[in-house]
Amino acid sequence: MGERRKQLSRDSAAADQDGQDAVFGALSHPARRRMLDLLQAEPGLTIAALCAHFDMSAVGVLKHVRVLEAASLVLSHKKGRERLLYVNLVPIQIIYDRWTDVYGVFWAGRLTDLKDRIEQSTSRKAARSA
Image (tube, rainbow, N blue to C red):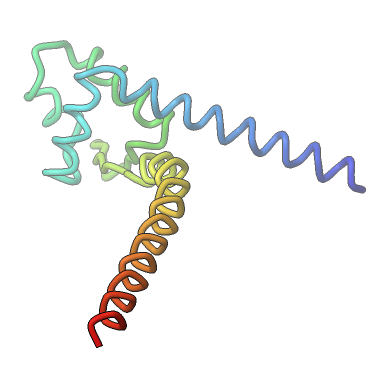
């Protein structure tokens, strides 16, 4: 039973890493970053409306959108014959939290130590003056 849990944990970690790799890969191209900015500013854009913002073919735009969808950065919803596109920032937030939570704990501890030292110093000075 324990070995099975370890394998599931390794599989989950590998899947998380693959997802993060897909996010970094998707964000590596300036056109895809611009697409995310446009979709954030105007949720529900169609592929055709998104194409109007780029000097590339509709096929080129669609290929970039598919990379963003594979990384779960763009979600699409079919409405009739159109696909409405929406930005999903959760994968970016997960990556952000992965590193900043560690540093946040570190700096919170350091600031608490600094606060304690300042308060001790202030109370010693007050005791000497009295």
